[in-house]
Image (tube, rainbow, N blue to C red; front, side, top):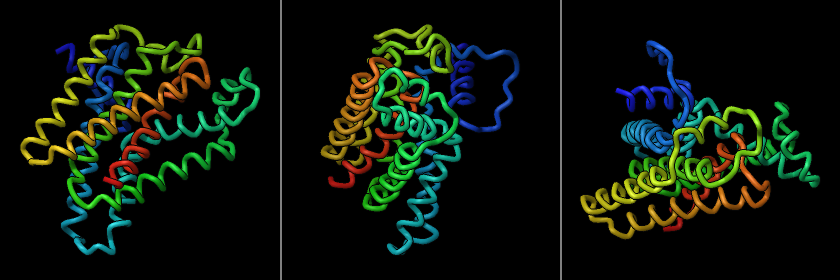
Amino acid sequence: MQHWRKFQAALIFYTCLPLHPQGTLDFRGIALYAPLIGIFIGVVIAAFDLCLGLLKPASEFIYLRSLLTILLGLLITGGLHLDGAMDTADGLAVTDPHRRLEVMADSNTGAFGAIAGITILLLKVIALAAIKDQRVWVLTSVWAWARWGQLRAIMAYPYLKAIGKGKFHQEDLHHWQVWLVAILLMAGNCAVAYFNKSLYLGIGLTVIGFSFAWLIGAWLNRQLSGQTGDTYGAIVEWTEALSLVAIAYL
């Protein structure tokens, strides 16, 4: 029952789904459930993508199909992570490191933030359009690994603000849980690879997802000497975008 309540809290925080649970929810440690939310969103948008493919199987509709699929993912999250990626881009554009957090906290989007948002969406749409097979598996795996990257950053790096929406994520969270989730994601990819007889794709999805999830968080930590709620969103968005690009080349 406790895990179900935590999952509900994670759904409410990470998505815009119209949920109305009874009682008070505890949001501490919900980051542990973020990869599961990623699987949920990945399955939903993959099912939508599959339906679009059945309705319009012609190849000339692949870009429209991919665009609608990516936009559905954006709709489900309410742009939560993309907003963080845009704010992070604005902050990193500032040459004075002492003003970066101030700029990231500004609700106004600057030029670099807008460029980052457009780039992320373009990369996702174009890369997904280039992926012809196993799109359900790809979307589910990538969306899960992207949120594992956020989970790892929450656990591994200091939070830079005294208060903030990302602060409570570190509560009730342990290192072994982060690595258990990673092992489960790897096992899931191995299981799907076994049944689909696609060993190389399974290895590729695991290596690509794990690598980008880790490296993007590490790079942002090096630039800012810590993390914020905005950088958590940036990890999710850039991991999704760059992973799809890398997979498209497989």
